[in-house]
Image 1 (tube, rainbow, N blue to C red):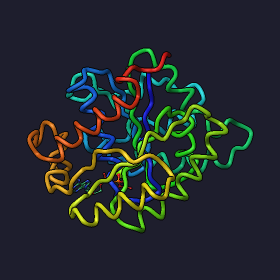
Image 2: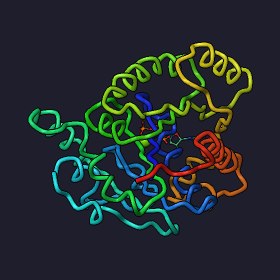
Image 3: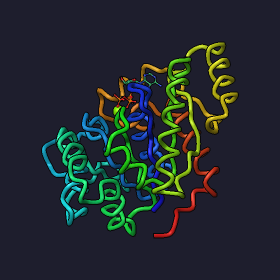
Image 4: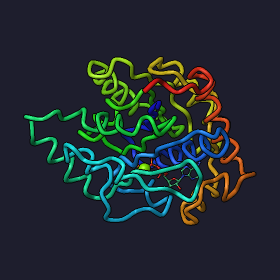
Length: 260
Ligand SMILES: Nc1ncnc2c1ncn2[C@@H]1O[C@H](COP(=O)(O)OP(=O)(O)OP(=O)(O)O)[C@@H](O)[C@H]1O
Ligand SMILES: [Mg+2]
C-alpha cells in the first residue's frame, strides 16, 4: 500500500476536493483498491461520501492504542473505495496526544494503517489546514505528499513554512517524498503563468504539469456528494483531476504500490 497525503497549511486551497477525487479516480479509472483517510476534524472528505457521523474513525486510531482499524473502515457506493471518517473527535485526539509525552505521539496512524496495508493498493489522506500532531502523524504515515496551491503570492509564500515542516518530519520518515505542488482554482492565464514561474523559481519543491481550473462544477459536486467523474464527467475539472492522477502515477513508477 502506498500512502499519499494532500497537505497545505492554508485553508480552502482544494485539499479535500483533490484528495477525494484523486482517490475516486484511482479506483474508477485505474482499478486500484483505495482507502481514503479523513485527517481533518471538519470531516469534509467524510461528508463528500455521505459518511460523516459519530462513528469511530481517524481519532480512534490515533488515541486507542489497539484500535481495530477494520471496524473504522466504511465502504462507499464506489467499488474499491473505502473511507476512514473524521469528526470533531480529532480535536480532542490532537490535544490528548499532545499532552501525553510518554507515548509515541507521531507514529500511531502509521502503525494503525499497517494493519490494513494488505487490503489496499493506495491510502489517500486528506489533511486539515494546520500543522499539528495529527498532521505529523499523517506525514509520518505517508510515502508521498501532494500540495494543492492557489495561484497567488500569499499561497506561494506560505509554502516555505510548509516545506520546512515537511523537512523536519523527514528525520522521522526519511522516505517521505514531496512529489509536487499543483495549482487549483486556476482562472487567468496571466496570473497562472506568474504563479508557476514564482513557484518554480523558488525551487522549494517540484511543480506538477497539471493544474485544476476554477470550475463551479467542483462546488456543485460537494452539494451533490458525488465525485466529479460521476457528477460532471466531461467538465474540465474532472478531466484535469484524471490528468493529475495519471501524472502522479507516471511519476511514481507507473503506479506500482510499495510493498507491505
Ligand atoms: N477547482 C475548483 N473550482 C471551483 N471551486 C473549487 C475548486 N476546488 C475547490 N473548490 C471549492 O473551494 C472550496 C475549498 O475547497 P476544499 O474544501 O477542497 O479546500 P481545503 O483545502 O480542503 O479546505 P480546508 O483547508 O478548509 O480543509 C470548496 O468550496 C470547494 O468546493
Ligand atoms: Mg479540507
